[in-house]
Image 1 (cartoon, rainbow, N blue to C red):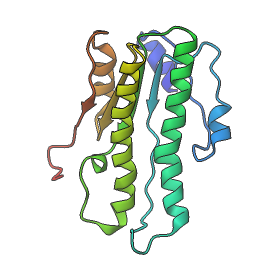
Image 2 (image 1 turned 120 degrees about the vertical axis):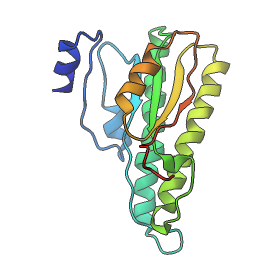
Image 3 (image 1 turned 90 degrees about the vertical axis):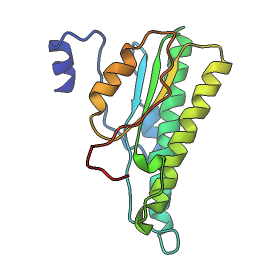
Length: 175
């Protein structure tokens, strides 16, 4: 449905949605685009109420697998696709949460916030690695609601502009 909406709105390119278990690397690696990837939007994330002092390891592991490792695997594979096809103007966008920038006062969310801090650090590390690779592929970390307009803004930025981080939240949100 989203692919049809994008096409009818006149956007160029092709949106190919896939369904896979992001906690399973084999599922992620089985996704292959015949034309390759020019834009990768990492938007998956999950939270379990698993405090640091009493949480279950399985819940922690699942958050790491989806929030950190899946994002990293998708990023690596998208970059390799761009590199193989000499795409020098691609974009990798990581949709994050405000929990990746500040710790909330709820014990149930501390481990989740740690995984989101990892997304913030991984995005900055990616930006540095892309710069060292002398590529113009850009990395951006977006947060909160109203993401569509921010993604459009980021993708529309001139190739010489690197938008590294955009933080958004509803007016009424305290933190």
